[in-house]
Image 1 (spheres, one colour):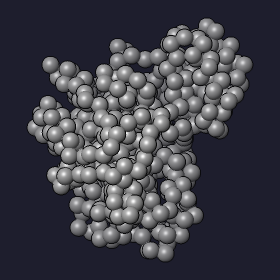
Image 2 (image 1 turned 45 degrees about the vertical axis):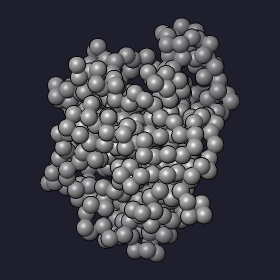
Image 3 (image 1 turned 180 degrees about the vertical axis):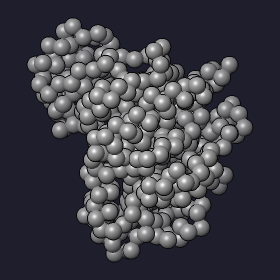
Length: 421
């Protein structure tokens, strides 16, 4: 069986490694992939947003199944294009991927169908947004409507910060067309939880919960990043909260998308805040999260390819989605200076033991050597019987990943440990 995976990050590497466990997966192509994936997939230099190139390659190679994971190609309609070419895919169609592609759409969906989320106002006019901020509660959460590489959310403590953020988005086009519409939300408090869920539009089966660590610095300080590590399961996500989320958020979201004629088939990501008033949705993503996937998939006992195909064929109810009762921890090793300016091109060395537990993201092959080529370079994951042991083992293994200017947080999972006490 020939499988195509669209994407190039640690998330895609984790998915590829999981797909490889199925003996039917004879050849896996990664478009474009990266140099660190070369041992697990055939990397082909076609950009994830080059839909014409992806479809042409898939047809020429007679691809049996495709997995589209990044947000950009999903929102652009990569699944639609591949389906039109007769290639079955895992991932939502463009009209369903809008749940991530437009924060305004997602907020309006939640308000229409009574799904708990932060109160908000949506603006397409700069003067109206600035006027609203004269009296809006602080801190205010300012969000660019469209995709912005995970950087289109600003938490403003003062009115000036809030207005500057709105001007950057709407007037200065900091995020291009994504900032033409802005969403201004109330600021929620409480532990954050990520829950990825398989859904075929009829059945929804959540994966094990996880906790991302977005800030660059220890103690959750500094700038937001794409994620510096993750643990799973999330200790704050109790069985009682899980039941509430299923009844009040997960199933109502699936039903709402169906009612809107936007049936979602794929991985639906729920970014949740456990507020004093109960769980609320911070954001939806139309795909696997990163680095959460690198912590969640190592706990999956069921066969990933089988589950994905069941989603595509709308028979998810008929397959088992089972996870280990163990704990996992993923520690990201990044380039010093990320998420702003950083140098590239440093040789990467990995011990054999570390390589077996590491997903490669920001790297490429240069003259036969693996070198750094991005901000987040690798994610190293360990699984153990306790969260404490998983954290210790992940850090021990991560020490086996070395390159000049390597940086990693030293406290991934510590908030989770505190919640266990």
